[in-house]
Image (cartoon, rainbow, N blue to C red; front, side, top):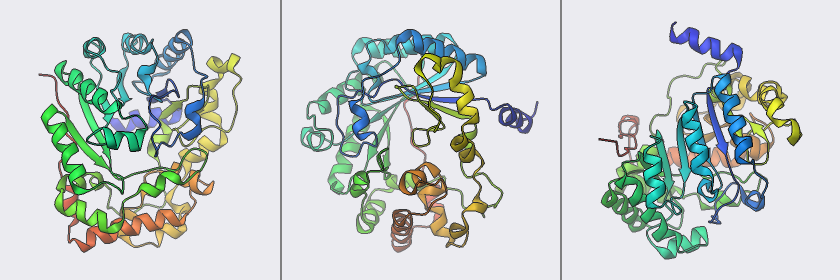
Length: 368
């Protein structure tokens, strides 16, 4: 069967090929930029037996891979049991964590599960930065120790470094050196998202145009964040978010969506969640609109300068538009402002599109 026919089959049958599962809202950090905000105070979450039932149902429906997130997933004492069961069912798994709770034992057990990726966030080069960003200075040493355990046991790991506007050049270089000394691949991220309650506070930490120019000039690796963007002319009939058609998101408290930003408007009683969550994912009006939103609906964007389109974050994320405007194809001043900031910075330092797209993608340590 050709790839085209496989894709068509998946689309017609609405198969959730990919799953994202936030197994808990609990977290041992209180990051100033976290998009969950007050959600971290929620304690409701599925039991191990309920999660096993959900995973079994997803396996039956044709899901191939699952990304486990939180909160901090390792705050669940049964998380390794969850991961083991997912692998037993044949899923590829990846995990997002701050690594502060990774012990030698947990790293060894993870290595036996062969996760496709463990993605770790790094919030600074020392206790002071961690205190400012996470509210927990002790997490720095614990994170570095956890990373060391993961690398020692040859777990495929990647570090993501969010770039705050109070970071200096030295801050970024120090974090890069830490990752290099550990032997782990890393990348920088310049994206911050509104909170799920539409609080725009996290957006205050975005770098300025002048800072972006400086970082892109002095640290070429920063350009990797902007690589891989599609510069082809937009087809008006093209669906804006392709992943919405085959990705399901499950929250700890029994909600379902296409991603953490685009959640079903339909509410599912907890008692009947196991039976109804896939039906809701397939039929909820908002989720359906998300899957079918096309570029022809973005009249304002279609008339925009090509470079601005290229760097417009909403081109890749209607969920951001939904949080900012209440509409999947809405326009918010923040979107245009950030797009212009990025475009102007790259133009000013005379970095060509080829220099941006030729930056090597983030590397990861591999199992030898």
